[in-house]
Image (cartoon, rainbow, N blue to C red; front, side):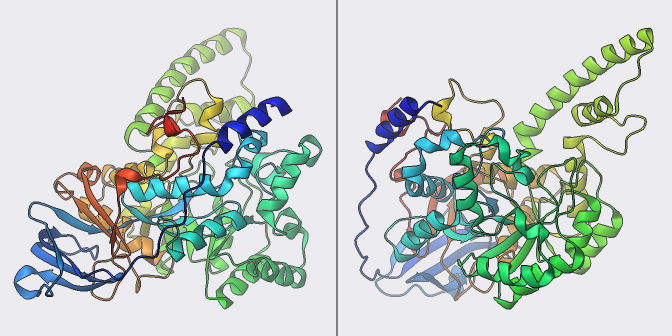
Length: 523
């Protein structure tokens, strides 16, 4: 992108002012939702004709209406015909400028001065769909921390947010480990962006001794991330080089645990994942994706025995996204049949690279390859982990810029197969997808609420509707246990005891959102 286009885009974006600080809210009277069906997130039968009483930011009482007294002076919401659940949790989102098309991040230069407003827009889109808690597992830490501080103080409205910053051991969005880009081939802006993402926790860590790594991981922890995600392998499905030795991984996990924080891994090979499990991790990001292989029974048993949380990319291989992949696989199979016919006639055997591509594209096994279909294997692994009784959560990779991290403003038309990865909406796709993969609607709601809280070791704070917990609540107009798609029938969102004006979100859109239309009528 030339300097003139960057300047023009920056001028265009600067016309949007940031929202003024919200006024301090006076103490509100108690709030009671009376007569609704309460699905409390604990996995048991719903409470028909139930009442929830909220005082301040906490649930004061919940139970059958006959057993729960509504305090005098409380604001009463008629819940008749409504269905009440805990707020949804997404355990894997990316709300900052941390991705680029093919690792090329220069498009983000136009947005960089408005980074915090962009982050806030993505977070508010989650809240708009009933997602009251998100875990951002890869992004630019410091601007996200500033936005989080504004949300926590009440200056801005948004979901509860946990931040990891960099994936420890990777070199940032335009690096060799993340995008396959040698340093000699990237721009000065990309180098700066890599440094802002890594904050000293990048690829150099793979070359450290355990003593050196002890110092380096603590230096990164001093920046204040809420949890640590590290690269057990490189980013890619293939080849997936193992990033850290067993003792190096133990250093990362143990130092994280000393701070009382969750340690999790991204590992895209069977052996890479095994090493991370043995290191003592608490959570696996997308265990459905282990390098286009079926996850072994040994690994599944280890995950179950250790109560390791499985944050899965359900939205990418269920619903409309799965149908998109099925159509592509059918076309690839037709092309494969024609190619194999030509090869037989010409007596030219396919190369190993061709065989590998055919497996990934068609989902069909090929002679001479241990690889399996990319999308079919993910579905197989997700089903296997669900059936084994793993602690499953939805972790969508949602990003405001959709697949590939491309700003919609730089595209002429809506990209195909992107809707499932938009903030908030992608989380809804994922919850629905759990049912497609074999869960009951009640199990899917439990996975998206209670299990989401478990992922941050915060079940005592939120995730279920119980007295003393945070009043993060979703009210639906239709029964999600009869049809999980009814989680789209949103009547009300309550975050921290306050009713959210979901129609007003996002409060100050900066980037084009294909699902919602142009920001401020600008396009």
